[in-house]
Length: 237
Ligand code: PGA
Image (tube, rainbow, N blue to C red; front, side, top):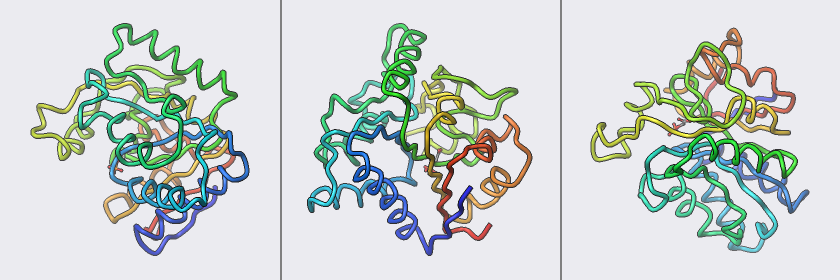
C-alpha cells in the first residue's frame, strides 16, 4: 500500500487525476472503475479539463461504475448515471456506449447483477479502480456485514448511509433503501486501486480501514490485501 499525503482537497483531486490520466495515456483502451459521491468531483473536473485541452483522449476508454440506487431512473437527478453524465461523461470524448452504470430500474435485478459482472470479466477486468470511502467504511455500497461479498449484487443500504446521503435528496424518505453494487471481490480483482478521502470526518475510518483488523465489519479494511493500492488523503494518518 502506498499512502500519498495531499495538501488539501484540490491537491488530492489533482494527484488522483494524474494517476488516472497516466493510466489512460499508457493504455488508451483501459477499463476504469469509477466512484460517485462528493469526493471524486474535483478529480472528474480535472480530467474533463485536461481532455478539453487535448491532453487526454477517452475515445477508447471503457468505464464501470461501482454502484447505482435501485428504483431510480437513469434520468433522476440523484441517480449515479445522472451524476456521471453531468460530472464527467458529458464533458469528455468518451463513447457513452462504453460507459457502464448498473441499471437501477432493471426488472430482473439478479440478471442485471450477473450481466454487469460478466461484462467486466469479459473485458479482462478493471485496470484501475477509483474508490471513495463511506463514514462506516463501505466501498461501493458494500456495507458492514458478516462476510465479504464476492460479485455484483443487490444490497440494503445501512441506516447511516441513508442518513449520510440524505443531503442530496429533498428528504431522508426519498433516499432509496436498496442499491446494486460491485462486490468486494469485483473491486479486489481490479489490477490497481486508488482510494481518495478528504477531511477530518474521514480520518478515523481511514485509520481503522488501513491499519485495523481486516474484517467485513469495516469493508474497506480488505484493501490492505490489495496488491496495488494507492491511498490519497489530506489527513495525517
Ligand atoms: P462521499 O461518499 O464521497 O460523498 O463522502 C463516499 C462514499 O460513500 O463512498
